[in-house]
Image 1 (cartoon, rainbow, N blue to C red):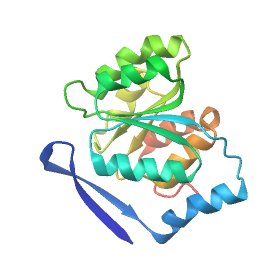
Image 2 (cartoon, helix red, strand yellow):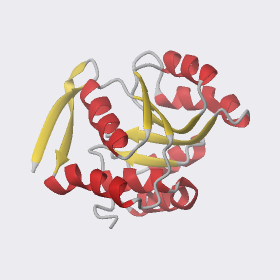
Image 3 (cartoon, rainbow, N blue to C red):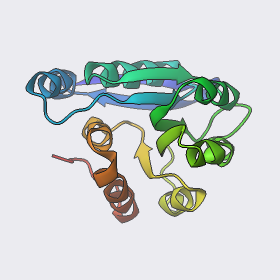
Image 4 (tube, rainbow, N blue to C red):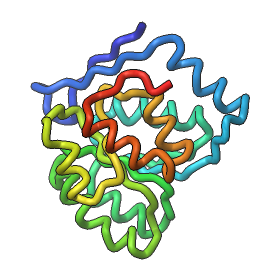
Length: 178
């Protein structure tokens, strides 16, 4: 087990904790080499915490996806002007513009089909969060520390998994998606 504790963005008073097991580190390579239905996706990761960006990006790249990382909402809009993204992961606690505001401003890009599914990404454990995420128009919720199996599942077949992911979040956090 490897535990990584990192400051959350510029806020040194709050921390994100990421736990990886040997299985988590090996699993992406097994999934890619065995061709478990993975189709490479273009992913936009909007995350201001450098360690979180690096971990998620590395994991997704090992799965065969292409990842574009930005650390602010404004940079996200510049990215979607020139690149079509299959999946967007939005940290809800971004500096300058919250993830909620980013989602609101992403709506026209969704309507123009410049982006596909959009997931909220947060360390918050507020009980009403899944409902707020759904009401804001997100397709699902990915919590920190990252559940690597959930992340892989969302990207393997988002059409089948996005509603399931939100339902699981509404029911309470599920540790094992296998």
